[in-house]
Image (cartoon, rainbow, N blue to C red; front, top):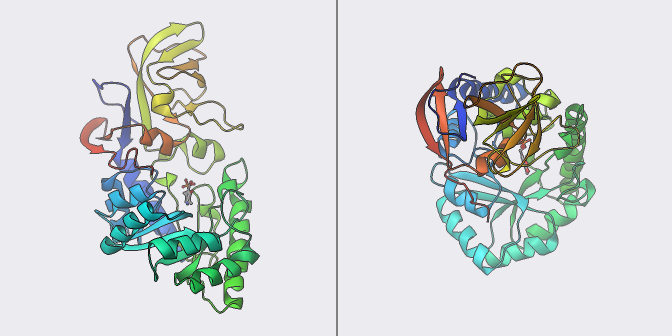
Length: 353
Ligand SMILES: Cc1ncc(COP(=O)(O)O)c(C=O)c1O
């Protein structure tokens, strides 16, 4: 990635050519795999990226919160809030207002959650039953999906299908097994719905490390998020090449020591994620042997074998988890051939309620 001159650092810089290639590649992969795309907008929180995903054929967008749905309703008329959200009077009012603007579906994974949605949002709301395919966060066991779906239907909700997030794909070598687990869990859940007289029209899955391993006919819809930009985790997992990563945080070298440089971009820019298997807190495209060994709020310490970059020079670090880095930024600087050509606001920054 070519870096623009004269950047005010730290800054998040996006290579627009690479972003466009990532969008087109995922759209083509979904078409070839026979499933629809409903990309997760929490990665970019940016209206311009969401619009491009829709223009590339996405059937709608996935969001992580009601507040993200409120932002993305501006550009998208079909939104899925992908977790078993708990409705109360206040959230119910926001969901009703959203339903007046867009086609809305939400996740549910309990009879109580379904009853709260019916009470505070009203009958006819589209829901998908969340199942646990191995990530062990939210979702019921596939064989319990029928019970939850029947309760939701009795409460007056419109059960459209089942969904899962195979987040256990985030480990070395885990992409293919997670896609396999996802396929089995979705099939078992669809059968459980069928047994109570309901159709799972939608079987939704997908994470960036597992999406390339989805077998034909196992999902009707996928919700990858990170693929638009990529990040150091995807490089390390082998899900994306370093030359496909479209976003980097650029800092300035403010300190040099023996085998060491320090940048003016810390956890408040890169995000603090570091899974146990990761080599560091980020990836340095200009010097892949460098390791981001420590983060303070405003500084990153890099172990740097070989000739050190000069003081005051700009240096790009690809964050470990791009969603968290973007959530910390006000704007993204879009570049082509090393020149900033546009600035896109992170419109849903902090829209986390
Ligand atoms: C419910 C849900 N769906 C889809 C995704 C997107 O997956 P990825 O971030 O691997 O692209 C996530 C990511 O956290 C998620 O939580």
